[in-house]
Figure 1 (tube, protein in one colour):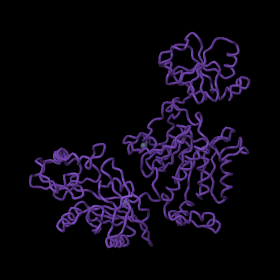
Figure 2: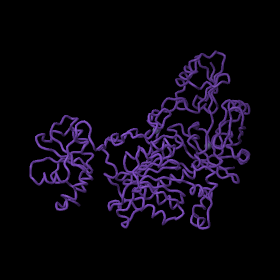
Figure 3: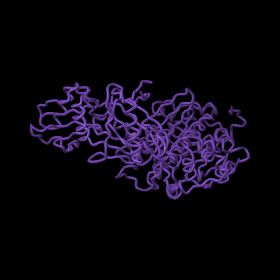
Figure 4: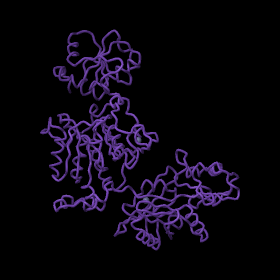
Length: 485
Length: 138
Ligand SMILES: [Zn+2]
Ligand SMILES: [Zn+2]
């Protein structure tokens, strides 16, 4: 058969406009061509060996690109055309419908307030109206929520919902710049609401002092244009992702740990979701959540500001954004990279025949391995008081500290053996099975995992967990030990 | 930045096509040699070719027809032109997916009242990197 090669593709086929192939099916023809012109492989197929989207095969005016035609015999006198489909689309438009933008008006004070935005060609009056028309839900009024909420308010987002169950604690002030010492012990959402009010009284604020669960999340986020994930734990991330997919709301994701941060946009117009990239959370205990792990003060400022910026770009419909991408920033060495995220064909939540069809009371804690109540063999534990008594009695006892080195640097437990979780099964011989052994971590969750790990590895000695971890114990024994740095 | 050069006459044709097509996108085939665009062939809506507010597509068989015609006139197809009517002259993901390596892609952004910006791009065969080119008119 004779194969016509489009002028636009010829440089990959030795500049021939027509090639004679002694085969009679499309499949054999393609094999022959790539054998003869190895260069053409690159233009015909993508990395996954699939025919590229723009390659089209015609026989007698009929499109035969679909592989179901590839084994059909083609008479010798027919000409096969190898042509490109030339096509494209515009970059994403604003997620705020025009009707809503048109319903927005500004008073003189607003014209003055947003003057610097109105001057920008890519924002202007139209864009600023989109911002005012937008309804954004921010989950978490902590480290990431602080910059996100304040910048959205300053930019003029018309409706901001803030969801958080927590109260402001002294240790929050290191990174949660929306709260001040005056806000100690107040609900974080109350403090956030006051800050928004101080920035702009015209903003509609919805402050929800609740913990998001499977049975309330949908009603909390439904009807919002964007959800911004500013939480610090895996349970919340999966819960928010699933709810966003099911409610069809784009999600601006952010996370921080130590010196590194991540930002991404998920579930934008059927794009990949968080689960496409992370079908399962990392093995519990190996990665402490941010509340256990900590991060340098300005890092949430950097990551949260990018989240707010991405949200505004979605609202405005401008620029390139992190749809289906994950930006990873290392603030210690000032490097960054962008990971492309592919939609997973068998994603549990965002595909056509997904397993998850509603935000179920599916056991996220169990899923994340952070369950505190134990199944099968219950784990015995000491309360901080019991352990203190036991230590003071002088009876021999082994303490195993499974925390990360940086956590131990803050608070050292006297006379503890240090074994990271990952090394436990291999180093079990260092433990004395005749002696009671207590496992400690920051919150008493990873220590449970440690005990389970050793049980699985066949260790038979008596093991106890320190309930509530060192967080619960530090006031009891450490003041006079002077172990706090 | 490397350059793409457009004959002023050819650019005027792009502008006219862009305004005529507004608010839909417009597209054309670029003729010339190397990185120099000397003429364009505007694609009209019809058969498998379509232009919408945020999408354009050229019927492969129409392109085949034009290829035959340009060959008769010893002209050469060096790339494609299209417009963005509500947003910047940046390539969308769809634009990028459909790019044929080593072909020139020129994008013109315009609004109801103004023609904004012309930008030029090429996708390299190796590692499919997309490079922006400075567009110059002569
Ligand atoms: Zn385009
Ligand atoms: Zn998914």
